[in-house]
Structures are given as structure tokens and as C-alpha cells.
Amino acid sequence: MYSPEIADLKGLIDLNIKKCFYELNQLNRYINGIEDSQIRMILSLRYINGMTWQQIAFSIGVHDEQYLRRKHNDFLNRCF
Image (cartoon, rainbow, N blue to C red; front, side, top):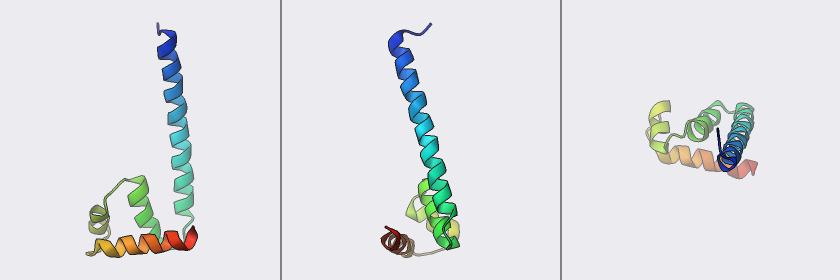
């Protein structure tokens, strides 16, 4: 049987996991609503898959990762 402290920690962990899944779902919904398919791919690979800029560039066939960063930053500056 769990001690009360362990049960409390388990409850907090479960709550945090639920919050993370909620935030991930919100992020996916936002990204999927973006019209520009390349921006959708960049944001998804970066924020959902956790890829580096170099990995994203390789994945989508862009040789200049700075291009991706600029495109990403331009999008964020326009939207926020």
C-alpha cells in the first residue's frame, strides 16, 4: 500500500500529465489550423517532435537552417 505522501505525489504527477496532454492537444490544434503547410511542418517538427533546426532542415530538404529560423520567427512576429 502507498504511504499518504506517495499517494499525494502520484496524484500530482497524474494531474501534471493530464495538463501536459491538454497543452499538447491545444498546440496540435493550433498548428493544424495554420494555412501555410511549410510553417505547419516547421512548427510541428520543432514543438511536437522536439527536433533541432538542423534536423528539421534535413527532414524537409532545406539546406539552410537559418532560412527555417527566419521563416519561423517571421510567422511568430506576425501572429503574436
